[in-house]
Amino acid sequence: MDERAALRLLAADLPGAGDDAAVVDDLVVTTDMLHETTDFPAGTTRYTAGWRAVGASLSDVAAMGASATCAVAAYAAVELDETELGDFVRGARDVCEAVGAEYVGGDLDTHQEFTTATTAIGRTDDPVRRSGAAPGDLLCVTGELGRSAAAVRLFEADETDRANDLFRFTPRVAAGVALRGSATAMMDSSDGLARSVHQLAEASDCGFELDFDALPVHDAVAEAATDSADRRDLAAFFGEDFELVFTLPESALDAAREATDVPLTVVGNAVEESESAEAVVADGEVVPDRGYTHGGDE
Image (cartoon, rainbow, N blue to C red; front, top):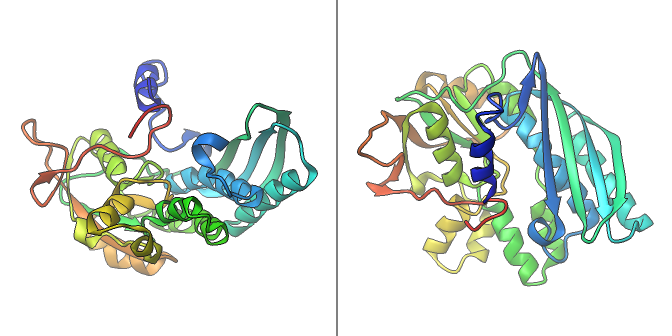
């Protein structure tokens, strides 16, 4: 059973689950677990690991349109090395500082492989959920796609300095807050653009028409990709970019662009759901529900 199947199994008992983070009154809470063998390629520094792990949870806060308050992390490794631990905490503190949050500690343990579990807390009294998209809304993304995919290729090529630079990202907390008044549905792209759009379609009971040619692809992808098809796959299906994927009315687009501190790109639009049609299509072809899945294949 993979992560998504497990979540569906638990849905009946956890009716409040299903978004990037839980909301209790105006408190936004989210948690993530990452492991060395599945989430940190060989050559990932502990500084990058601390930044990326805590950043992943802060990205979930951003996806709810919430401001980020603080984060904690549980850190476990085969042995507690002073330098590695210090670097991890430094990365965690720096990514929190980048979004106006505070890193306030966590827990330590030993384990058979480097593993970290992070929790981030934010606040909003008007969260943006995945379920508000409606036919006619534009489908948009922040920033650029494929950054993490290019980093993994560079790790494989032993270009670790550049790979670590690409593997660190700034969670889109400021953009999420700016979009809160106009976005009708929103999530982050940790599972990949295509899978995120499928999840928005399922939550909002609508379909989507995606424009692959419009995708904002990071420059590093062109160097990492083997051909144009590989370039599209790295941008659309690989995941772990932690950009925001959201919908909004066309009339709100210009104001949203002016309000956010990162580029917004229109990559498609929401359409009526049809029992006879696939949820997500591009150029008349079905877009597979494929992306990153914990505990299973793509």
